[in-house]
Length: 366
Image (cartoon, rainbow, N blue to C red; front, side, top):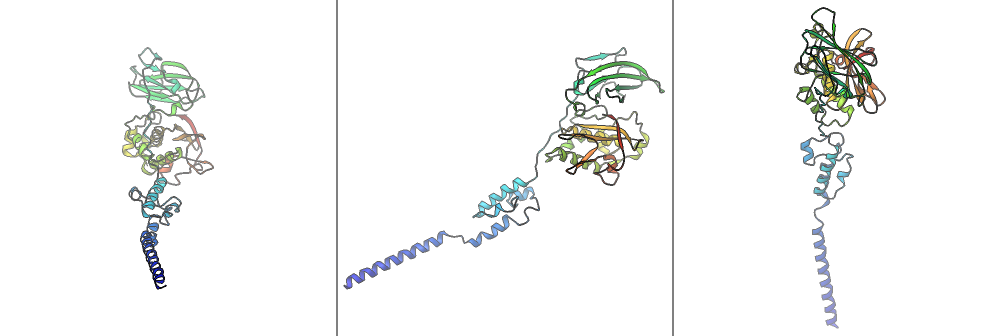
């Protein structure tokens, strides 16, 4: 009887020792304690994560929080939460998309030309793309080209070189009557050549994507390259327009001395010198902005006409998908566009809304 009791006691002790060993082993596997994870959660997903965008250095080290401040705080381990923070921060970072300049050039001579008796050539091979080119070879010192458009306006272009010059066809389809006028002084011009040109544009905004005599640029023009930098990360048309407009308004100054000395009938903006000085007259502002916007894929018109019934002025309008030509705009508040006039805006006042400052009547588009 005593032997049996001793055997039962031995078995009980062995079972107790085994259970103690198992319990000790389980406690070691449960480490680390929950208290060590709490600071990691707080650090990786700060409560103000949605109010400040992390810099590139911060996001590369997992310092930013999630877009909603919640998903990054639910992981069970420090490494997992750091990975989650990196992923979430990347989705909220500003776009770094780069939009290289789109310089749609002009060319001559082509296959369709008209040559006049003095050797002057008009090349209309690309009329469907919204432009003609002229190369004056006569002996006169004062040359103008008038283009009577289908809808009535007759803009005049001064010709100062003997190389090819690009003249836009800006008033849609129809017949354009082109005259080359020349003299050697005074106000009387002789017709050196004329051409009636039927035009059928390949698309309605063709003339406003390309450089021309009043908005002359190429891939190497400084404002063109800078426009691409300004619009880095601007993934909508409106964002591009605002970035370029705000830069010009904030960095250009109106040149009052130049305005009092230039002849409006024979002035051609030089975009290189305008950019170098960051100053100019209204025509300079408009031409510079047009070059910057056109090379970012936005058809842009240089508008020349009258403000308040008498002041000769230049501004721009931009073609926006879904809205069409928005005349003299920059700011869209969700309901309506507001008038844009970079020249007036740079001289003070509310740079976004000039719609109450004057009545604008465009006479010519370039």
